[in-house]
Image: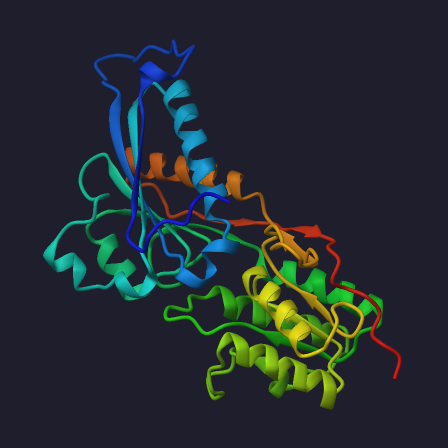
Length: 328
């Protein structure tokens, strides 16, 4: 993994035509290649950076910038400004005092991970927005996101085939939750019902509004208690960065994964040292980054084009954390 950036660090990458070998497409008529400045805001909570997918997304954005300059005569130099901004620091009132770096002609902002919808709405009044891995239902912004429900359904199917019938769902509490946890939880409930399996609300951690929010350690302790006293044999986590601490926490509680309890995640990130690879699903995050850059270039050049909503299918990561439930 690359070094972890500080909460509001900034990386600047300037891609120029002089650096792109083999470019020979001429401009046509009186048109002049338009230089672009694209801000990338990465909304990564500090506790999740070590298990995040955003470096691959940024890699895809940078690689696609070179392709856009090489293949499109209307595109000039592309400057990419990457900022790491915690979601709770991205506020609507910020846009009354200053313009975002992506504001102005030839400029736009790519958002990675969820931000407060009110802040996104305020930003969208000042700049062009493309959202990655979060959809904003009531905002007219382009987004690229994963097919969450289908991904979760595939994981529940694997657990069911392995013999699990008492399955819980675990997530974390976030300052800005976004819609992704709700979509994955909804896919989980639908997947259970499709297989005639029981949904027990007390086995849903940090997803129901009437329940008290649990810390990371409390999630593991509560999950372990349900394994021991309620007969839960598997936990579906909303993300890998939640699943790996759960596996570690269950170990601390004396519960072996997958011998005593199975665990699944979502995203397909690399496992931390000493932990088994979580059974999960993933998307090609470099491809998502590449598509986001192209969408932003098109949004800047064709600002009146219709809103685009792109849903990307997931691929199974078999992992090592699903086994048959223990005999009772």
